[in-house]
Length: 66
Image (cartoon, rainbow, N blue to C red; front, side, top):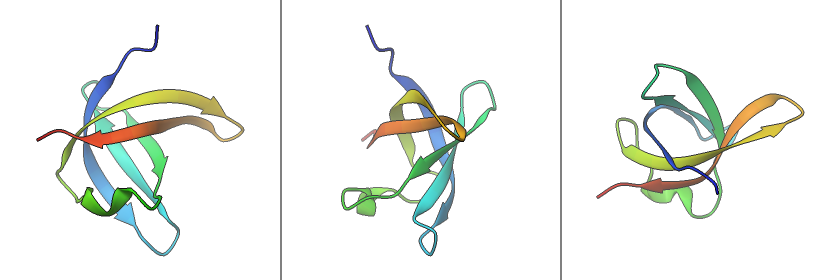
């Protein structure tokens, strides 16, 4: 079972199509911007999942919390 984590968008870099989420443990986790990321703004609280890729941990399935 995949566990959803909670964090806050700390940085968005539209030029490089990526961002950083600060999770509940104060860990910085990168994520990639996609066509569905328009609703994500700095300080937005989000749910996300963690995957391991070639560059380390990355947040996936990032969803804004209303």
